[in-house]
Length: 174
Image 1: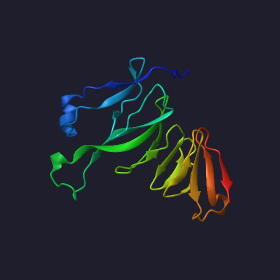
Image 2 (image 1 turned 180 degrees about the vertical axis):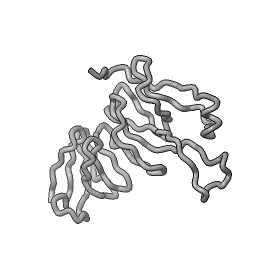
Image 3 (image 1 turned 90 degrees about the vertical axis):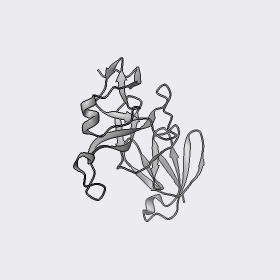
Image 4 (image 1 turned 30 degrees about the vertical axis):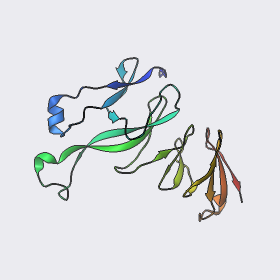
């Protein structure tokens, strides 16, 4: 049975050889641990204005770092090509990665919900369901988010969507 408590952010020391090989200069990497044991060998950082709270958040975002190589468009110097690419990642309260984004994509996690938006598109974190595209949410309440979805080509979701923040179910108002 998977233990679900005591998820923590832990500072990690990166091997000097690995640092040199992948041109790592930052010192603020973390890893996810549970009861002092690393969950997976993934380097993360807490980025931007992001301030996850592992005691209260059902979902949170971290910058995940993966090994990558710059193209010749960026540099032709062979020793400078290896680097760690940053990608936003949404994780659940158990530390499971739910959604990983491409480099330079900046999602927005809707507070206290299982919904995120990217480029004005709204999605369910758990199911991947696409709700619609709206350049603004009309209103947010404790339990719901309302989005103006009047310009969608999907007639089944055209109107105002009332989305339950906890379970992702929705109701349409035409």
